[in-house]
Structures are given as structure tokens and as C-alpha cells.
Amino acid sequence: MRSSAIKRESFRAADYALFAALTLAVMLVCIGAGSVNVPLSQTAGVLWNALTGQPQPGGTAVPIILSARLPRVLCVALVGASLSIGGGAMQGLLKNPLADGTTLGVSGGASLGAVIAMTFGITIPGLPFAGTMAMAMLFAFLSLIIILSLAYRLDYSLSTNTIILLGVIYSMFVSSVVALLTTFAGERVRDITFWLMGSLAGSSYMNAAVLAGMALACGGVLLCRARELNAFAIGEDNARHVGVNVRRVKLTVLIAVAALIGVCVSVSGMIGFVGLVTPHMLRMVVGPNHKRLLPATMFGGACFLMLADLAARTILSPRELPIGVVTSFIGAIIFLSIFFRMRRGR
Amino acid sequence: MSKPGMSVKYREAGADIGNALAAPDAPDAPDVRTTMLEVRDLTVRYGDLVIVDQVSFRVKSGQWLMVVGPNGAGKSTIVGAISGGVSYGGHIECIGKDIKAYKPQSIAKIIGVLSQRYSVSYPFSVGEVVRMGRYAHSKGLFAGGSDADAAAVARAVELTGLESFLDHSVLTLSGGELQRTFLAQLFAQDPKLLILDEPTNHLDLVYQKQVFALIGEWLKTPGRAVISVVHDLSLARAYGTEALLLHEGRIVAQGAARETLSSENLNNVYAMDVFEWMRTMLAQWREEA
Image 1: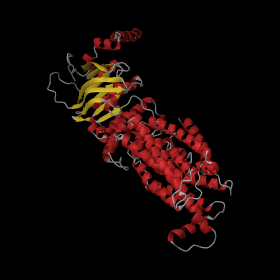
Image 2: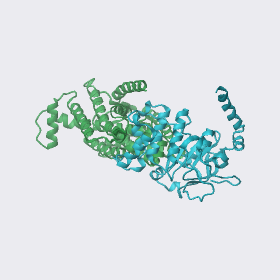
Image 3: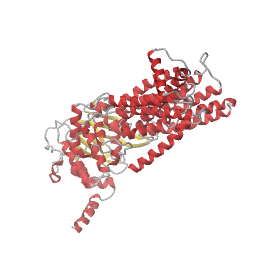
């Protein structure tokens, strides 16, 4: 028999190196480009000096890169990576190509928390912007608890259909509450609307650190469940039959995805289509095996969102578009083309 | 298996259908075979509706138990209960231990399940699907490449004749090829007890024959047993050593396949003259010949 029956399925070191190099290149471009363009060599020089602790040259490029662009691009990359790996994991877990991190309803819950914070001006003393983030994370976890409790009550086995249905119903309910709050938000409507469309303007290194911590922890959990996600992607019954502890794995993946999405929404607002489209694009490159797909989606999602953010910053410069508008616009076109290609390929 | 009032004898394997069948048991020989599965008072309810009602049976190594009955008799529900997909009342023991006491990976090394139909959404290769059968035998993210895994996968692929399909996407396979892929996954899993839920329901005659012959060969290795849910009474009688006849969630008859699937029992359960129907069906082919 051919060796392909026993070949390794994992994402190899060379694959990691290639994808990482590509991501770093995109990152460099996105840090340098903007309303003020900084040449790539100068951008690389400033970053290298900052990394190695060497003195920086004078001029406006240094504060632009280190104070404005770098924290923002880091946050964008981490949000893109997190939304994408969450989407990839959910598509495998639920065996549903239309699933992503928002399917669970957690992102809707997080946005409700953020809108409550903005409408009623809830802040944390000393950290005025952290109120929105804290409320978004709190509501993300509350939403997860509500959805899983309801799912347990309805169906002890936590079947995928139950989870999808509850997620959809919960998201609809939450969006109606958000609309109600927005109606009474008065002069804060503009801020709320802009936040709901997604924005990473004003991201800080603190935001990046929180996102990086969550991406490492939850992304690691998801990567460790790649074999189980393969079995789920074939079917939940098949997963059970080959020996997967379906309830435990499902719970683990759902909590990890919910945590990732909750933190992402708290930092960036609602950014659609990244978690849906990126896994589909990468599946065409590396195949459906989650051992390769999940790492690839992290890098791919980071690149996709960094480029979308660059487009949001530069298309109508100096005016900035909400990143969610750009991702939804590009994502819808890409998704449609993938859909047509898949239908033709069958 | 036994049921009060029913004559239970182990029959000779049907020489008329070739060597696909398990080795026969000598009548009245001392029964030293392992009890692979024992089901006692199995009851499954959906709300107030009783789907399976106080069903008890036992399967020993070397046996091929055919679970037979009309639609809605509870056949697939019994399979679901054994494979952990359906909540139940009663007791299911696997090799002397409550089935719920096993960890999922441990039970997968003993029991393997082939469903009646598979639908796939993603373009996994045939090789990847077959390798998933080794999940219970290996641990960790980077597992799956041991010599034992490779040998088991190679054996399963060879047995099912899938060598030339290994790199094919499962989305491009026919129903028969897909079913064969999951059968290979099941063989790679290397369980001791196969549970087949209408494994050839949607497949053509050639493939039905192939699958039953393959499973018959598999069963020849000592310490193995098979439970099949089947609609085709002829297949049940030809390949089964034992049979369980169900009607509306209850056992109507159980024991050796030939005695259990008798004219009288089948007529009662299906509320029609089953043998007469079969004779009529066969006669039209004879007329043509």
C-alpha cells in the first residue's frame, strides 16, 4: 500500500516557518502603511531597534510606529488569529460550514455587555476604557453559562443542533435588547454604532497582552483537540464510536472558543466574516485536517484582518472605515466565490 | 441467548453461501465462549413513549446476532443505547463490566459501530478517515504514526480494497465506497465486537455480498462477535448464527437464527404471510429463467 496511508498529518516546523514569515511580512507592511507611509526598511529598523534596546533615530516615524501602529496591528493580528481559530474549531465541532465563533451567541452577549457599559457610562476607576472591556467579557461568560445551562436542560448530550438553535435564538434576543438600549442611548448612539461595527482604533499594548494571553491559552487548548475535532468534523456519532469523550471535548472546545470570542469582542467590537471565511480559505490550501487547519487559520486570520484593517485605514484616508464593514464586504464576496467553487467541485 | 419456551440450538454455518460465515458450534458442546455483551431489561423512552421495553439478550464470542423487526421495532435504538448515543434504563454489561464504567477510549477498543449511512461535509481523504479509527489506540496531538497504527491501517485498507482510493476526497466517493471507507475505519479500530446498523441498507447487491463476506471473514478470528440490525430477512437467516426478533420495542422471539426467524414468528410480527411473499418474489425470477 502507498505511504500516504501512514504519513504524518501534523503541521510541520517548515510549515510554521513559512506561515510565520508570511504573517511577519504582512505585519511589516501594515505597520509601515497608513495615512503617513513609512518605508519598509525604516519600519523594520525602528522595530529592530525597539526589540534590541538600541537608540532610535529622530523624526515622526518612531512615535507613529511604536505608539500608534504597532499596538494596533498587534491587536488586529491577534483578534484575526483568535476569531479564525475559533471559527475553524466551531466548524469542525458542529460539522457545519456556516458555523463560527458567533454561532454560540457569545459574541452577541459580549456586545450586549459593552453596549450596557457605553449606554450607562460604566467605568472602572482609574481605567476609564476598561469598563466596556470588562462588561463585554463578563457578559460573554454569562451568555455561555446561560446557553450551556439551557442546552443541558433541553438535551443532556449537548447535541450540535440544540447548541446551534439556542445560539441563534439567544443572538436574536440579545440583538433586540441591544437595539432597545441603542434607542435610549441619546448622544452615545454614534459611539455604540461605531463600536458595534468593529474598530481597533486606540488599541493599546495592554489590549495586545490580554489578547495574546487568551490566544495562547485557548488556542493551545484547541490545537490539543485537533484529533477530536477531526472526528467531530466527520460526525458526532463517528467521534463517539472511535472513542472520543464527546461531552467533555465539546464542553472544552465551547468554553475555549467562548473565551476567545468574548475577549476579542471586548477589544474590537463585532467583526464579522473573519471566523467564517478564513477557515474555508485555508481548508482549500492545507485540507480539512485540523492538525494542519487550526495552525494555518491562526496565521491566515491574522493576515486577513491586518490587510482588512489596512484597507479600513487607507481607502478613504484620512477618514477611517469600521473594520467590520470591510471584513463583511470582502468576506461576503470571498465566501460566495468559495461556495460556487465548492458546488462546482462536487 | 435463551428465552423460556424456545428451542435454542446453534446451527451449522451455511455451507451454501461459501466460506463467509463464522465457524459453526457443535450442538451440546460445553459453552466456554466469552460473553461479549449482556443486555438486561433495557428500556428506552422518549418522553412518555416507550421505544424499547425490557429487552434482554446476550452475545458470546463467535456469534453473529441479527436484530430483526419491522420499522419502529426499536432496533436502531438498541444499537444507540449500546454505543452510548441514547439514554436508557436497565443494564448493559460488556465483558463482565458495566458499559458505563468504561472510558470512551477503552470501550472503543472493544466495541466498534458502523452506522447505516454517513454524510460528510469536508474533503477528508479516505486515508485520513481510516486513520481516525486508531484514535482509541493512540494519545496526544502528534499521535497516529506508530508502527502498530500503520500496520492496522494498512491491514484495514487492504481488507476493504481501498488501496487506490487513499488520497481521494470522501466527498467524491459513491455511497458504497464511502461505506467501505468507514468499514475500513472500523477494522483499523480493531474492536472485538462489531455493531452494524443496517450496514448495507442503501447499497447494491454486489456490495452487500462483499460487506457480509468481509464481516464473516473478520468473525472467524476467535474472541470476536457481531451484532447486525438488518431489514433483509434472507441476509439475517443466511449469515446470522443468532437472531433477536422485535416488535414494538419488545422481544417476540430470540435464539438460533433459523428457529427464531421461522415462518410463524415472522408472520406474527409482520402481520403478513412472509414466506408466501418471498416465494412469489422468487417465482417471478424463476419464470424468467
